[in-house]
Every structure is written in C-alpha cells, then in structure tokens.
Length: 214
Image 1 (spheres, helix red, strand yellow):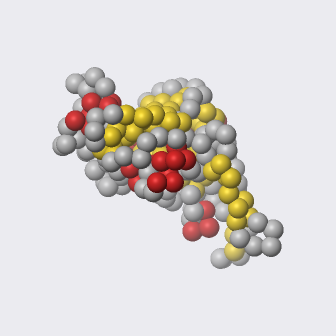
Image 2: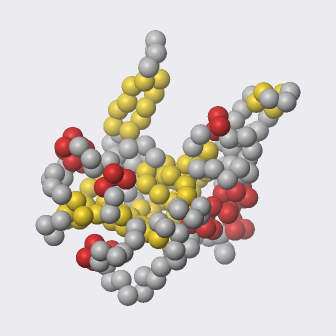
Image 3: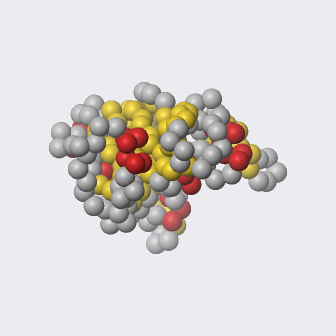
C-alpha cells in the first residue's frame, strides 16, 4: 500500500530505555513497524466478527439498520500524507455511551430506543501510544493502542432509532487530570481531541474504533 513508505514520519513519543533487568525509566511506545501493520489491517473492510464484507451495494450507511443480518463494521482509509478517513456502523449504543438518560442529554439528542448508529471522521495521523503502557513490555508487542490525530472534521455520530427517526451529534472529548491531594477531575472539552482507539476485532485484526476520551 502507498501508506507504508510514509509511516516513518509518525512521532515516537517515548523511547524504551531500561536499567537493569526489570526496571524501565520510560514506557515503550509503539514502533513504526507495529503502527504500520495496524493501519494496514485497519484498511481492510471487515465486520466486527473479522469477516471481510462487500459494501458495493450499500447506498447509505443508515440503510444498514434495516438489515437485521448486517454485522457491525469499521471502514478506514489512509492517504499517503497520513490523512485518515474512518466511518462505520454498529448496533451497540454502549460503544458510544448511550446507556443512561444523562448520556442522551449530554449528547443533546432524544432518549428513545436505539437500533444502532453510524459515524464518520477525518483527521491527520500524528502518532500512536499504547493504551496501557505500564503493562506493555516491548515496542512491537501486539496490544491495543491509541491513535493520535489532528481533527480535520468533527467526529459525527448519527443515532438510528427503532421508530425510524435519526439524530446526529458531534463528539466532544473529556479531559481527565489528577487532582491535587488525590483523585481525578474531569471536564468536557468544546471539541473532539482526535484520539481514537486502535484495537482488535474478534479475529485479532486491528481496526480504528471509537474516540478514546468521551
């Protein structure tokens, strides 16, 4: 793929420096080889169950909700300049946090039974980190990651209700910081911070997923 020779520009946030057999001064950061492999896998059109799917006959993402046999899927492309385009479909509202009444209020959409949702986003890839660096022992360890991007569009979600109506909203990230004296405090930002999950489907393929901080 054309993207492979361009991935060397991905920033390495931390180096894997060790002292002694079991002490690491810094947590490892994903190698360019691992990130390259993850993004290459993410560009294969697959359902969440790891099966490749054909979208040629799909005229609209929202039309997928009418097919009860349609699996969730995640579709990503990466341009040579590292511009990422991602969109997908899911029947699981828990993936976007639509579980409680407060969740619908925060999104500014009606609280009604949900059939599924679709999403789309465009951003410029600027780096990647492991989602749990303290539990990762190698820069090449196949583990869940966080893909860092510079937003070029909002991360837009369209909720598909069971009554046939829809509602859209743009994701706003949540910033969490350690509180002086212990604990943490969180606040909602005015926009999406560009951080996306880069994790696995049921067949252990990488895919670009939902926003990390939301």
